Image (cartoon, rainbow, N blue to C red; front, side):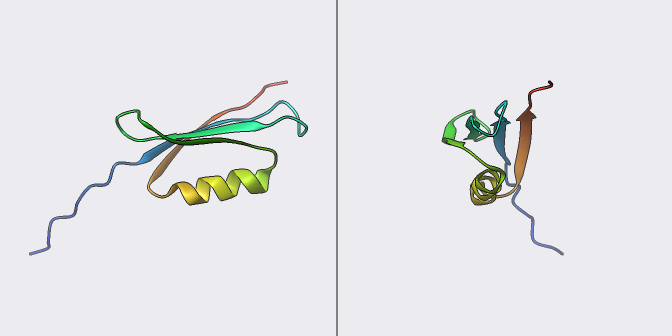
Length: 68
């Protein structure tokens, strides 16, 4: 018989992409109760990926991007 596995709630991350590379994009992470775990602003794709990688797993990502 297998041991029961503990279900881990995902971290929810929101990414608000900037309109241009000269403006900052915003990131925020919340837990399942809506408590803000962390937030920041970044300038480039490498910073976005590094911040998301550091947020942990499992992770749900929502992206707000300009449509122009």
